[in-house]
Image (tube, rainbow, N blue to C red; front, side, top):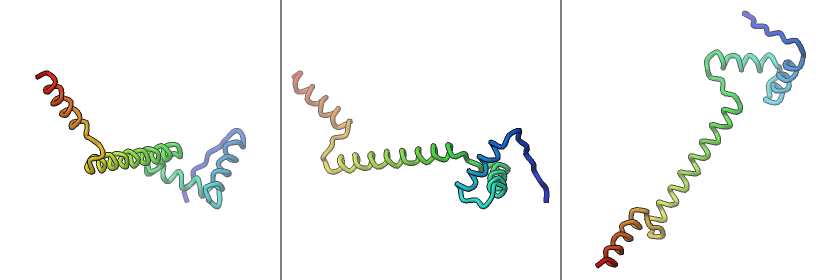
Length: 99
């Protein structure tokens, strides 16, 4: 089997990688690195920060969609006037006041 080897001057990075592997539920550091490097090779790797950012954006979009749907429903029920209706109403009342 082809091998890829990486050397470090200290044990700090290998130790951190071992902890990350355990934290993510891998049986070994090698298994974790094999998975990560395979994703990198196929350009599927997404860092944790990128994943959290993407998830946050998705939640923001969902929240904005919910607010929009609520505003639209309130407008349809007549509980809320759309900005164009307000402008038209103000323009028509201005015309009456000028006459």
